[in-house]
Image 1 (cartoon, helix red, strand yellow):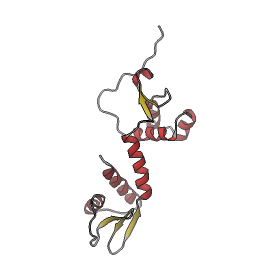
Image 2 (cartoon, rainbow, N blue to C red; image 1 turned 30 degrees about the vertical axis):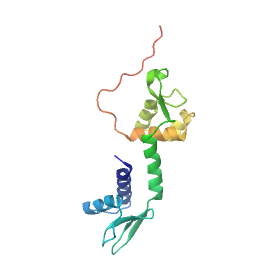
Image 3 (cartoon, rainbow, N blue to C red; image 1 turned 90 degrees about the vertical axis):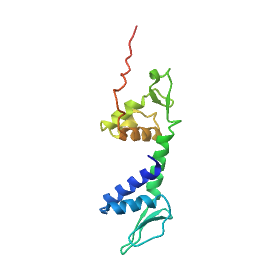
Image 4 (cartoon, rainbow, N blue to C red; image 1 turned 180 degrees about the vertical axis):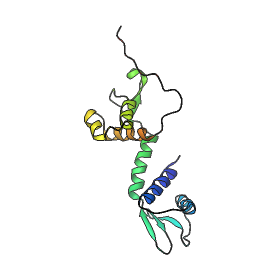
Length: 158
């Protein structure tokens, strides 16, 4: 799924949260408005100068700058997490950890899924940056991968 599709879903969710009822045809028009420029027709949606605008008897406009900026930040973080996470066989048996720490990403993600507040996580893991916690939050909202989970790491003394 690309940025265009994510922006579409986010905008539709924002409109529905504000009480705007959208027909399937209007949803299609919004989706095409994010793709290519169209000439405005009665009741159609178009994108112009960072806004989503519905032309018609009652014009409606939505500022996309804040939504787009936040979504672009999260999309880039998900696509290119270099500098935020690393995998090294010498650290935690090769589990994905936050860069410069020995904190497994899975630990923080599972705590977020369990409902632990972000403020608590910031207190519990002060060495994690805002970006690292954002990455964990994105991963917590993602579905778990299919299949059998990997065995948990067990430490034993000889």
